Amino acid sequence: MRTLSLFARPQLEEYAHATAQRRLEIEKEIWSIYGEERAVLVLDMSGFSLLTQRHGIIFYLSMVRRMHLVVAPLVAEYGGKVVKFEADNSFSVFDTSLQAVRAAKEIHRTLDAENHPEKIRVSIGIDYGKVLMVDDIDVFGNPVNRASKLGEDIAEAGETLITADAFARIPDDAGITGQRTPMTLSGIEIEVISL
Image (cartoon, rainbow, N blue to C red; front, side, top):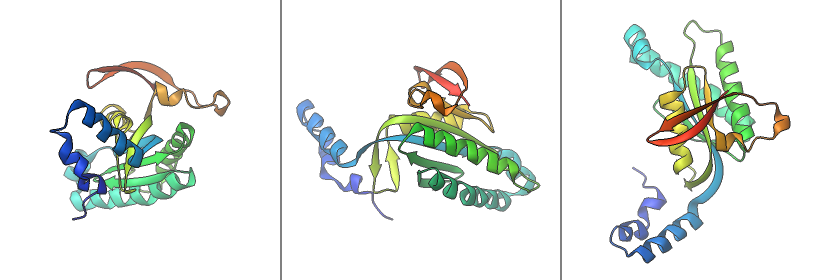
């Protein structure tokens, strides 16, 4: 199994026993190596329990593969990068919130238009901020956590939820609108927009 370079850094082992000052230095070092400002899109497929009960796990895994084949090129088309597919989730990063929103809209549209008896339904969460991009195969940080909560736990099938902070970065002339709703994510009050 490949170890991410971040976890091979001796600073992480040192961190737990370091002084407060040294911890700040370690954090600064790690952020300088891996830190990037990005929009994060987390997608989750809906209906796992029902579909596996109805058709079996192999059928569902074939749907996961169909999702991969739709999502990867659309993320790239809108200037993003799929960082990883994990189970029936997709984690992608973009330079801007607008790119992420446009990709999300196209993902929903493309999946809805599929000519298949069992439609793939997804929920999507989007946030923006400073993340740790590690070896181009994993991403960590508050924007990832918030996008995951929105996409996996809160958004309904066919819905995209974006944090107000990420939404504020979209130019007004882009024509992106949605319904604002305050919510609590892991004890933190935030405002989200349902697109």
